[in-house]
Length: 306
Image 1 (cartoon, rainbow, N blue to C red):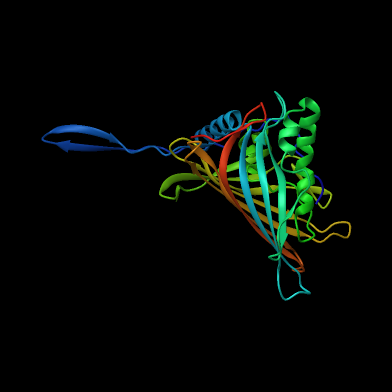
Image 2 (image 1 turned 90 degrees about the vertical axis):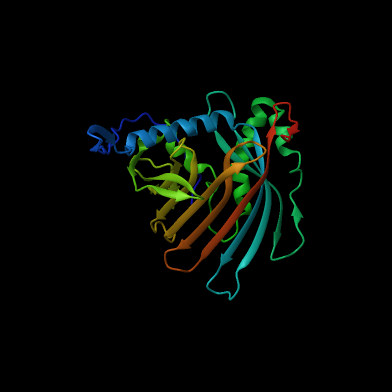
C-alpha cells in the first residue's frame, strides 16, 4: 500500500435528495377540527449539510489537541499457530500545519512492546512535538513526516499510513464531499441517541487512497447524530485488487466517538481495524483506545483542562 494521497479537487456533484412527504390527519374533538402534521423525516441533503457543518466546526476548533493512544496490533501468519502482538503507545496530535492547509491527525510513537516484552522507548520521541511546533515552518514539515514515520511501527507486513481515527471525517468536509455519492439509511441508535447513517461511495479519480499502486474506491458509513449532526461512528471499507505481484487486501476500519468530559465535546474514543489478504495468507487486527485529551498550546506547552 503506497503513501496516502489526499488531493483537493474542485468537482461538482448534485446530491440526490430523498423527499419524504408529510401527512396530515384531521382530528375532531367536541366538533372542532384540528390538523396535526406528522413529524417530518429529514432528507439526504439536510442530514448531509448538518453533518458537514459539524465537521467544519470540529476541524476549526479541534486544533492543537493531543490524546494518548494505546494501540494493540495482532498479526496472524499462516505458518504460525500463534499471533504476534505489538502494543504501541503514542501521542496523537490533531492540527492544521498552517493557515489554509488541510486539517490532519499525526501519530508520534513514544514506545512499543512485542509479545509481552518490556517496552522499548523511541529515541527523542518525548520532545519531538514540542521541538517541531516550536520550529516554525521547518518544524511543521517535520510534523507532517511523522504520519509516514509512524507507519514503520505497524506489524504484519501490510504497509498503511491512513490508520488515524479522524481520517473518514474528511469525506464530509466540503473540500472532499463531492468526491462521494451518499445515501441516507434508516434511523438508528448509538448509546441511546438517534442517529442517521450516511452510506458513501467514492466516485472520483484519482482516489484518496492508492492501494497496491492503483486507485482504490472507498465505501462505508458515517453515523451522524439527529440532534446536531455530530459524528458518533465511522466505518471505512477498502478493497485492494491484486496487482504487480501484490496480493489483494480487504480492509475495514471502524471508529467510535463519545463525549470527553474535560473538553466537553465529542471526540474519537476507539478505533478497530481488520486487514485480510484476499487469499487468506495474512491477517492483521488492531484496536486503539484514546484518552487524556488536552490542548497543546502554540507556545509548545501542554495544558490539561480542569
